[in-house]
Length: 131
Image (cartoon, rainbow, N blue to C red; front, side, top):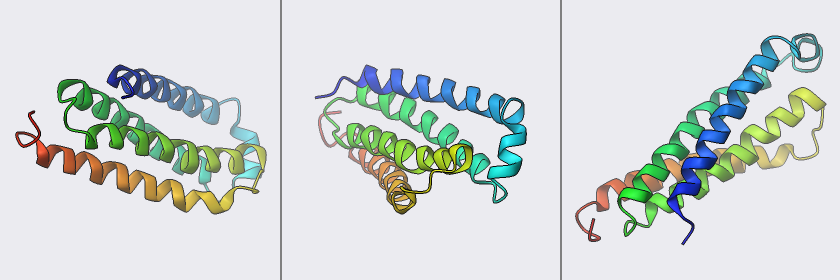
């Protein structure tokens, strides 16, 4: 099994990356985003990235505390996939103008939803799976 601590590390790194991208978007990339992102995809990517980075930390904490409750690990994987597919794709579109992967954006959103549902299932299983 993937060690829960890696979800903690990846969650913290993603939170740091999101903060750095937010600062870059407010300063260094401001003019570029004004020209290339009139629809506001960058702030949307940033919002979902930040929220789900914290979710990844929560999944890591839950998986570390309750290793027998497998849905917590699934939650971490799904949230990580959502960050890459949803937020990553929106960053590519808004910063670099790369639209080749636009079809994967909804898959990333589904990963976010499934990740949070897996977390809920894990919480419901507490006490039932030896936790």
